[in-house]
Image 1 (cartoon, helix red, strand yellow):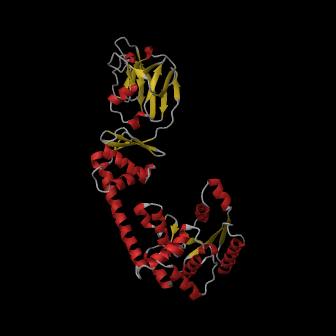
Image 2 (cartoon, one colour; image 1 turned 180 degrees about the vertical axis):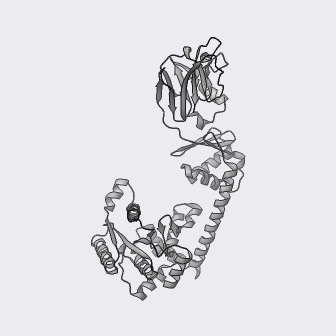
Image 3 (cartoon, helix red, strand yellow; image 1 turned 90 degrees about the horizontal axis):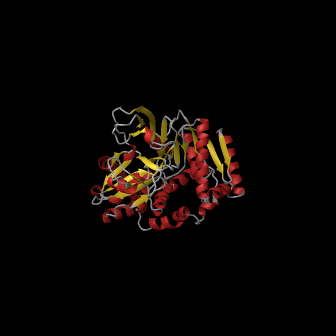
Length: 439
């Protein structure tokens, strides 16, 4: 096993004998096997152990066993005493999740403080199979087949190609001591139930069941990688970015094979889940224009013949502007406020505004528009609801939330970024202009 291990870490460039690593060790058979293999492969490492204080005296004996082992092996030993139950209660998570967060956070803290080259973990082939099935039981989809990576960031798992049986045979042959965790034999947890009940039953279905499963996982993982490449091509071709929005035409999704997966992988980074992706697709098929879906950070609007994705706008109360202010800072950008001669050429770009200064009453108020707000758009004689005005301009629903207005003495003078009010416009009699110019 030693020669196979050395070839593996060399072929995959997983470990460098010139560097020092951190071995995460429980004192169990897997980490003690890895300790021996690393030593015989000439890999330098320090030992890190978390005492979760979950098994009474056994937890203390595990720590003492590893402390003496590190001392006899002349290895630097790091230990962390955790109040796992308190951590779990404080964060309202399971004990297992608490233990996971505690150990990975602490391992990274030690690695960073000691400037070590990586964190070596003793996960092996059987752990990988269990992880894949646990992922599938959680409904993680094709990415659940990927399981654990041999190297991801600072985490390194050089034992993944080796089975639990190979590890046990090696440890017994080399007479390496280890600590047995009695909780591993219980079936209270999903992983242990898979390990002791479900997977043995599955393996018994055929002599080659285990190897076939591993081969199937490898092929599915490769298929997933191929899909990722095709997805990136599709996204680059079909998702259009404009003015802070991401737009997808319905014709580019509703009749596309794998549409639900394409939607999910597009929207997942923005906080949407697979169930939402399926609901969105169904709404696309039924053309439920106006429907809005929301994640913790984004809004997705089915707007006529397209899907429009936008960030949830920042909460905006209001600000006031005095006659002496020279700038207006809004979430969507900064405006310079300039007083210029009324005879200057007018800036007619939509994002800026020029208004007759003498028609305005200070302080001006800048706020989000509200239902029922009305104004007289430039060039018109009658008032119009801002909601109708924005509909006429075909402003997407997700963009309407961001619209703000400038109010002078109770009258809307400017729908920012769209149009000033007719009453505030410059005329031949205008002597001074108030110019809002976006930087």
